[in-house]
Length: 196
Ligand code: AMP
Image 1 (cartoon, rainbow, N blue to C red):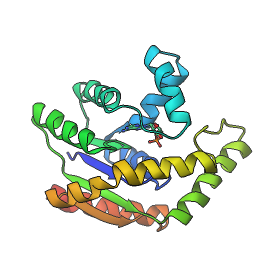
Image 2: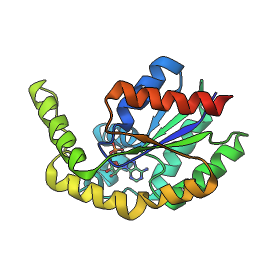
Image 3: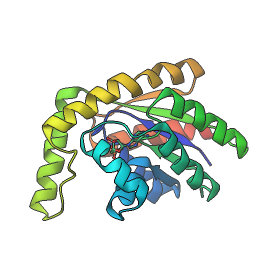
Image 4: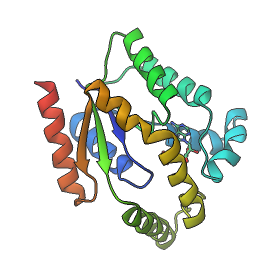
């Protein structure tokens, strides 16, 4: 069992890789973005409050996302948790450490998906085009202007987590621009090493 964070800017491939780990290792994906979108579309009070913040590419408050994660941690983690899109701030990182300690668990690895901004922008445009072609709804925050704001939020609030986890000795960097299967192999190698 391993608890890991997938760390990287929006569009780095965190969701794709998390999906593979769920299928192949029976881990549980905790995506705060998915949880917030669910709250938004089901029209809960909290969903209504966060909708506007999400649509303009800003971060939702630490209190809300930490609350969401706390609830999910109580439900148990199968073969370990994959934190996808959480933590996104230093306060969230501290809270996650404390929540895991409370249930007698720890983080086994923080896997940074390293990518460059140009590649991200074309990925995001591609993700919107693909959704359109498949007749699926396009995420309102997957347009180039909002994406630029999401990237700024990443550099301001989330990128400092690279230093935080490097200092803690938990950071592993993989090449997020490699083909999906290669990225998956790199992540697998980290997990196998950490589980020994
Ligand atoms: P994502 O699907 O991870 O890109 O998240 C979509 C949006 O949800 C983000 O742009 C934020 O507005 C919000 N969000 C998701 N996770 C977090 C988080 N851990 N902290 C703050 N806001 C978040």
